[in-house]
View 1: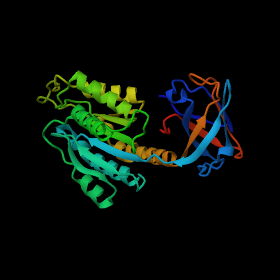
View 2: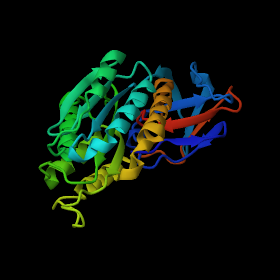
View 3: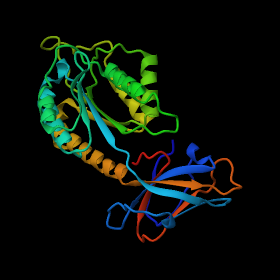
View 4: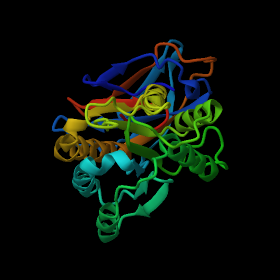
Length: 320
């Protein structure tokens, strides 16, 4: 999947590596145009755009506004070692949800002792506040990878009828807040491999926030209690981060206040900006020259009539 590219000039000339959608005689590309003042251009026309490749110019078939909304799900570890961080979880999530656009549906899942909904696909502010306040520490171990697997499986079911080239009705956004300590999941390599594959296939935008809390002591002066599977959460989170090209945010046990002061509020701002970009792009359908075949070479898109504009291109509608 080609990564979108942000450029400053009015004329864009790039090669979209691996852009399978640009093999066909008639193809589509997604464009976000931002004027010199930073505002999205909302009414582009075919006469504003030129697309060329080595063998000649393409014919612009249509240009239409395309909005691809977001849906946000948060997984939060409320296991036995999270009691000291709980106040920062609640404060941070309150700011996080308040900072998101009001039209974005949100869900919150506590992962201990088993993944369970605190609220699901809601825009109701009262329900959101009530659900955040329901986060309490549970004595049962959280189930980090089990929660990720269940999330991916729900997407598999929801999107199972989509054709390979068809975009889902929304772009999934996943935020996971977990600890790097012992977990109660039934960790199976194949199940986790399938989960990560599904997250990639469904274009999930992931943020893995991993908290390393202080270790409890067996007794005063004794050695820390170390579970046999500690550290697995961080490895799984890093794999998710690398494959989906998301974010990995390490947090120390003494730094959990950053969840409420900077990390979660800042993440909400990023998602809000992503939402604006997703909802103000254009879908351009074009026909390649009659003698064109195979992948486009030296793809070039030019934007006219909007001096100083910046543009972002994507082959799949997922704007950065």
